[in-house]
Length: 140
Image (cartoon, rainbow, N blue to C red; front, side, top):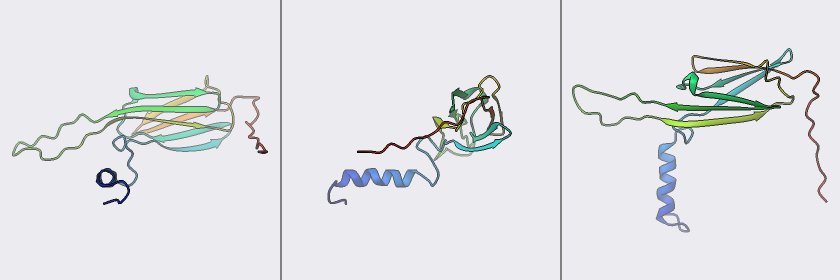
């Protein structure tokens, strides 16, 4: 037992350690892993979205910011004709991933496709826009 927080903390800690596996998110294992490659004035983004239907994916572009949102639901039922189902897991959740790139994007020329659980976005850079600079501020 935790000497400061008591048994309530122990119960909470056990529930997290017993229920979450390595790499699994709190939304039933749904997480967005992204790769971004820059080539010939275009960013190619690949995002892993297994188990998501194409119509449940939304992508928004605002300047140099990309937002990917997805909903997933596993509604399959386990059935056993010789006995009863003792344990069955389903997932239902939503996830959002937002990231910034170093240049504004031309949203009118952006394209996307979803195949085999992978979302691929081709995001051309907007012409004539310079790199967004970061400035350090001296604290006095």
